[in-house]
Amino acid sequence: MKIAVLNGSPKVGNTAAMINAFKEGAEAAGHEVCVLHVGKMKINGCLACEYCHGKGEGKCIQKDDMEQVMPAYKDADMIVYGSPIYYSNLTAQLSAAMQRIYPIGKPAKATKAALLLSSAAPGPYTGAISAYQAAVGFMGLEDVGVICAAGEENGSAAKMEEIRAFAKAL
Image (cartoon, rainbow, N blue to C red):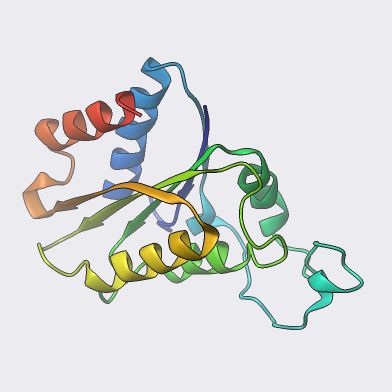
């Protein structure tokens, strides 16, 4: 299975550790994993210009780093989103990358999705999980799991092993 992982963190830290553990587990199970660091990319928000559904024939008028992300959306069998919690939500960078799939509506081949979240304290996940579930539902993907790491769980051997095991079981 081809898995595209969108890392929404603008820095290397807890989210990257979670994604690396996921990648290790998935690759150990024979899956192909492509990690895209959308948190460090220049991805603008949707302009709602509808160019993509008219003259653009499924391509966005904006020429930014989303052009690197779109092939992964099109080719992946599964999409995994990773984000630190910013003000009880996903990062703006990840949100933009999720919303900019608008030109194609939904991934062509993907049937599954998962979410990895990190935060300094337990509990602020409601907004992020809700945004993820809404997007995944709209795209018609099966939510196969949400894994959260808070405080001391971030980077802990136990949490990294939980994530590896989750990925191996896909």
